[in-house]
Length: 62
Image (tube, rainbow, N blue to C red; front, side):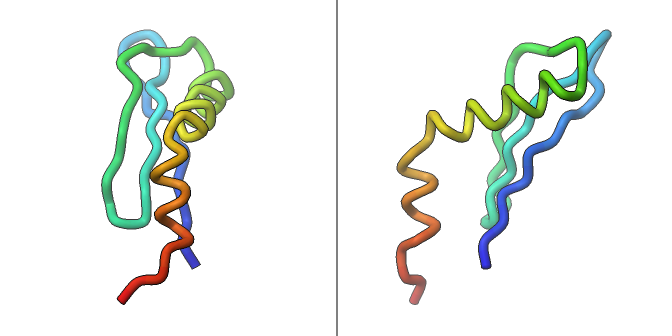
């Protein structure tokens, strides 16, 4: 089963959103957010903007 991790990392006076895919590729936001909840939400929205990455999770591996 594939898993995608959404995380919030402290950066400056806030938190940076990060999406990590099963292959180890991660993408972080350029902006910071004042709360962990806002950073996680931003990561989820970022994930929705990458439908090709989500579709790749369902392709057979071989």
